[in-house]
Length: 109
Length: 113
Image 1 (tube, rainbow over the protein chains, first blue to last red):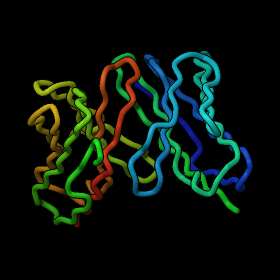
Image 2 (cartoon, each protein chain N blue to C red; image 1 turned 90 degrees about the vertical axis):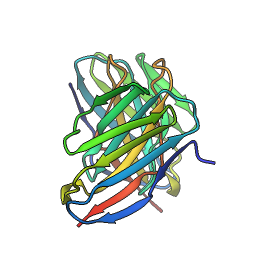
Image 3 (spheres, rainbow over the protein chains, first blue to last red; image 1 turned 90 degrees about the horizontal axis):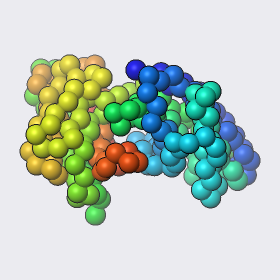
């Protein structure tokens, strides 16, 4: 099975940088996803990591360390529209996703 | 047009009623999933299907059933709704297992009184 932990809430200031951490314990690891979800809306794909290291995509970057069971999502130059929940999800050997509880990010002016 | 659609978007019903939530997709994906989302608990898998003849239970299948009528359609039923099934329900699809990225529908907000 999978156990995924991420902070429940975070607050940051517009224009700043924020890092959202995710730790996991898994019986079979086959990749890690980050999704963004605005309140009442569907989750949308942000990033995917299967190898150790940093994946950069515009203002968003995602890092993975498989040996430590650890990932983070880095958001730069925060904008008010980045206020949302960020979901960490681990894919297992059967290609099924297990989601963490999500981190609600509030961006303040 | 949206690639993954869900109907209804909102539903209020009473305890004991039978409810069906429908999901359709135009992405041509074989794999379809039903999740429920509760505050602080993330997305939990109810049922999934890898093709029309394949149905599998997820983490929390008790009290639910599904039907895969076609590659593009996957319905979730609550045979006798109860208040703790009040939640936001999402349908999702994915293609090959190479990436496993899942594409979500807009969700159905279900309230059971």
